[in-house]
Image (tube, rainbow over all chains, first blue to last red; front, side, top):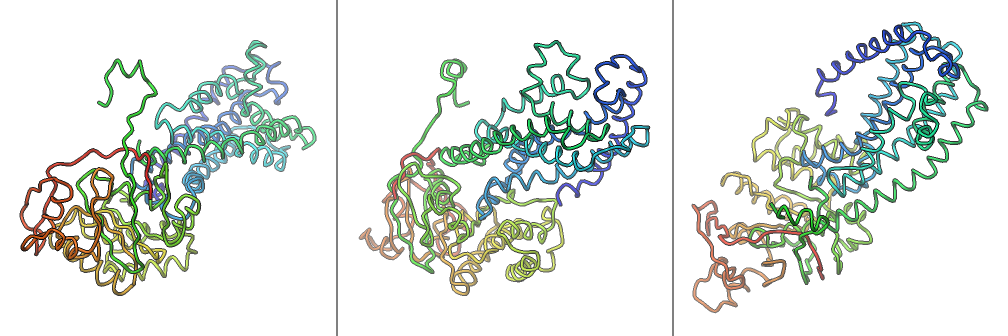
Amino acid sequence: MLATSYKFEFFLRLFFIFFSILTFYFVAKLVGGVGMAHLEPYGGDYFSFVLIGIAFSGYLMTALRSFSESIRGEQMMGTLEAMLVTPTSASAIITLSSLWNFIFTSFRVLMYLLIGILLGVDMSNANIIGAMAILILTIICFGSIGIISASFIMTLKKGDPINMFFMGTSELFGGVLFPITVLPEWLQTISHILPITYSLSGMRHALLQGYSLHALAPEIIALLVFSVVLVPSSLLAFRYAVNKAKVDGSLVQY
Amino acid sequence: MQKGFTDFFLHPLAKDEITAVEEVNIKIEKGELFGILGPNGAGKTTLIKMLCTLISPTEGTAYVNGYDIAKDSGKVRESIGFITADERSFYWRLTGRQNLKFFASLHNFYSYDAEKRVDELLSLIGLENRADDRFLSYSAGMKQRMAIARGLLNDPAVVFMDEPTKALDPGAAQNLREFIRERIVKEQRKTVFLSTHHLGEAEQLCDRIVIIDQGKIKVIGTIGELKSDLHKPNPTLGDVFVHHTGKEFKEEMAEHPQSGRRRMVHGMHGGRMRGMRF
């Protein structure tokens, strides 16, 4: 309700998606066939590659920002205390507060894909079920990272190391703008410990090349392993952070 | 600045800790309007926030409506309403009705039930005609009535009020006091735990009061008992306060019909709660 009360900002954000996509469309024209060997596993077209990268990396950015920003936003507005005195748990409040951001990100991803198709990206062979499986696991992994990030905000108020680490490394090592095979081998090791690498790789294979669930198994298994580690870790971290803030009396401080 | 520049680097993790509430032992009867009085920083708000499960005690425990605040915090929150004078605790860009419906959803109301309950409360606080105006257009008195409506959404057994008349002009404050006494306590039979530093307000409203200072109970009882314990002619609640806290008052222009508005001259700094015992 609050987000839709800022109607101008909503339409402005949608409008600038076009500019973002057009920028990469023309960059792709410039790049042409350069680095074709690296793009071959994803269909060989740079514009298709980068379109999926910037569209779906939005989920990571949303997860990293929305949980911690919703806590900080409610703290600064003064509404957090009134929310936490209700029977709804703190974790449910934070998750629900971020829901709008995830809905808007999904809408934005849809816009990216539609505009991409209009500009010639071929998704005629897309495996929608495979893409949905990757998407669900992606949201679970990224959401968990976002909740760990929010736990740091709850405790430290500012200077969250999780946010800084993933923001700083994902674009460079996660295969958002270029395939990770472009990186020297020793740097690719970092790529392999980031969930975004598997999310984007799986999504490209599912949407651009129509890989079957069986062919997507390496990415699905990797994301499942990340989920198994990250989900309980995030819940524990958040519970610890809330309890610590309650003992310190700093729940609504910012 | 709390720390010097050198301290910032030499002791980066050191924290300033203050015992805000200590060895507090209170029992409040059902349907009672109980007041907690103290100067700014005495620990009133910290105590209320502990009972509302917003702050955890490092020692001891308390029961609210029969539930342990540490072990059954969810049940405690189902049983209570929290009314604060902080008007920032609402979404100013939303209407009064939208705000109440949002908080009703956090109390697990279904949409239809939420609408019904919100209508009842808007009628109770007399804001039905302004319910669809944005919160930012409300006067201070209307905002405070909205806080009361929000505090009553879940029909709580116990209502905590943290200085509910703080931001109101004398007329609005008096109306609110009457509303609390007549509608919330007499009519709805709620148990009310009210913090204030207006002695007249406590005198007008409360069945019993506790005076706390520096996080500790100084005295507890009915206002009549506390006055008669002074053994002096025509004692005021201000005399009781000075007797037990040793702090002077500065009398301001009368806001309250009986004893005028009084405010503490000597406050204390609030801080983090450590070592509370109930």
